Amino acid sequence: IHIVADAEAGAKVVADVFTRTLQAAGDTGAVLGLATGSSPVPAYEELIRRHREDGLSFARSRAFLLDEYVGLPAGHEQSYHRFIRENFTSHVDIDDAAVVSPDGTAVDPVAEAASYDRRLQEAGGVDLQILGIGSNGHIAFNEPGSSLASRTRVVGLARSTIEDNSRYFASAEDVPVRALSQGLGTILEARRIVLTATGAGKAEAVAQLAEGPISARWPATALQMHPDVTVVVDEAAAARLE
Ligand code: F6R
Image 1 (spheres, protein in one colour):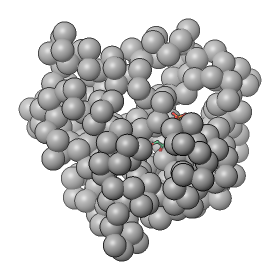
Image 2 (image 1 turned 60 degrees about the vertical axis):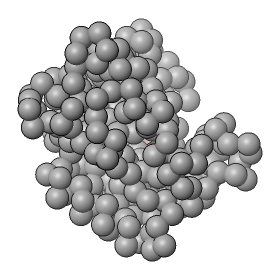
Image 3 (image 1 turned 90 degrees about the vertical axis):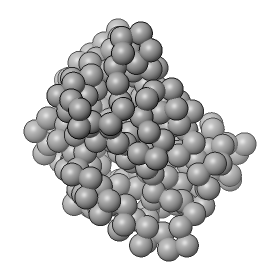
């Protein structure tokens, strides 16, 4: 667990983990697991800077998003497909076709979820997964009550998540109520995980993640079962750690 002064310092720690993973993968490229939301944005900005100024390359890497809203086409302003391109991947040298997300408009979302999970496995699994955390302890859209062994599937969003995410939409009524999300079991298969959080609103979730009993009540506690997790938090998000 790294407790850092601010989001900028946290971004450097997270970007260092990415840099090491990309360097270790060498010419074959890494399989990256990407999160949306506000938490990873400073790290993405730092990675874009390293690409431009230091020549950090994503050329042969592939990327899988954690989740996507059901019902939003890829081009929709609030789709995670669009978010990751605008905030990260279109600014580095990763092939756009190598950045994949669950299809929120699939006619059969259940089949799309199973196929996404399969595609992840066929890619050889994720080398490095970046995560944010919800104020209710969710990771990806695995809301409280999610099975610790869950796979990519269609999930319903918790009321608190709809409220948290309504800041991106005209109103809470406009936030989709379902998403396609990697499961906790899927996420735990990533070889390395880095989770980042800032602000007092995340303090309870971060304390549960690090120190609470492993329980579906706080889905992020599943990460305690993973051997290689780096948690990067500012003072406010770390405030309730013992
Ligand atoms: C995003 C995701 C979510 C967010 C979480 C935190 O792909 O899966 O779990 O990481 O809701 O969101 P922010 O970072 O906006 O506070």
